[in-house]
Amino acid sequence: MASIAGTGGNDFIHVAGQGGTVPGFNDMPVATDTGDTIDGAAGNDLIFAGVGADSITGGIGNDTIDGGGGADVISLGGGNDNVTYRGTEVSIDGNSGTDTLVLVSGGLPGKSRDLDGARRHVSDAIGALVPDARAAGVRLAIEPLHPMFCSDRCVVATLGQALEAAAPHPADAVGVCIDTYHLWWDDQIWRHIDEAGRQGRIAAFQLADWITPLPEGVLLGRGLPGTGCIDLRRFATAVRNAGYQGYVEVEVFHEQVWSRPGAEVLAEAYAGYRAFAT
Image (cartoon, rainbow, N blue to C red; front, side):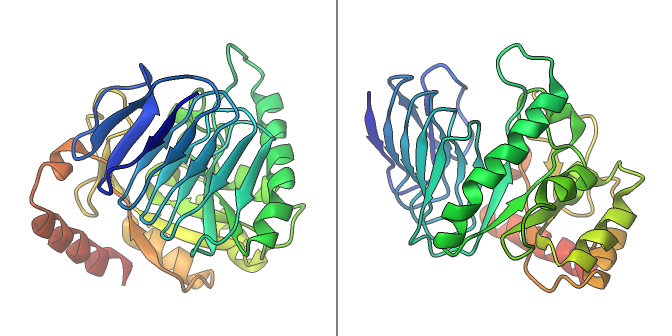
């Protein structure tokens, strides 16, 4: 059992041996794979816990949190947090300062090949989270990821699957997140965006481009708007016509982008947003 606190900067807090360093983040391995107490502190943190019953506090900033399985208690800090849950025994602590929690469901457990069963498990887990989320004043947003992440990160691969998982719950309790990087390939996406709009379920919209060749590991292949092959304007128009009036998030994971001066990247991200999403 370990207790670890972030530095106040951008920290990569992970179970020892789970991954290498991430450019721009302070590398902070967690010593054990049991029940750990992790506090990200301020900053935009990547937190990957172990399989035990962990207490995880994101802190102030835009955090990515993976509970790692087990009966975890996740306390959201201020900011837009992205949480991966891997078991039904997860509870959400309130006082978050945010109103939307984006859910990345996790991949196949262990050596399982039961994709249908994993998706049923996700639906059950969402149902278990809804009461805590509503009590905390937080809306859940199911984010489908590209099918190449199905095995290890997210068994929800289409917007249609996300809408199906959300359907048993009120739209103000469970919505969906539309991410261009993950959904651009789907020939059913336009009707599903329209359906999500009619149901009032669009809770978040993320903008990133698809650039090839993909880097090793594929996670860090998200490009700034306008640098790849996605019809971003069509996405933005469809989401807007579906009634979404919230924030547009430019979400880019790419080592070459991270290595550039922040002001330069911000200017290009804003120019891409203006060119394709306004």
